[in-house]
Length: 216
Image (cartoon, rainbow, N blue to C red; front, side, top):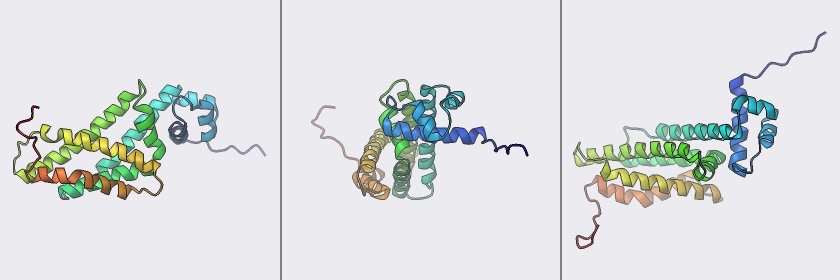
């Protein structure tokens, strides 16, 4: 009898396997320290096959960034239920963000620690971050317009708040992932307690203003 042929793994499945290994390696060891040999071994393939599928270490890292960024943005968007009150929408969005970053710590490390401080990869993370900020801005501005009964409330009134909120969420996710026992729910509740007092006042038309005697 002839030798039994093993079924070939589909290319998409093989690439996913290599990407999983790459995200784990880059996330835990960093871009510079990670080696293609290590990634190939973890994926259970040969190094030439990694190069054949994903071209180079730089291309592989870029692919990891794009995959993890897409997954994070999708998680946040999916977590928000549009028909809920504004505070519940924000809560669900934050909970989805912290749940995803907690369940994918290596992917979050790639985005938050490895890519954002290293050219040319920083641009990829910046694009992802801008998409999340724009989404949060719209979430807040729509709720604020409804609360004020003012359909013309400008985005600039809340754009800075959205930027600050996303920045705080990023820092808190890094803290939660490095702190034993810190849960996604706890992180989301912490940020809601920190942010919603100000946002709630904005919704009610009571924003804080600096003293009139101070220069801008």
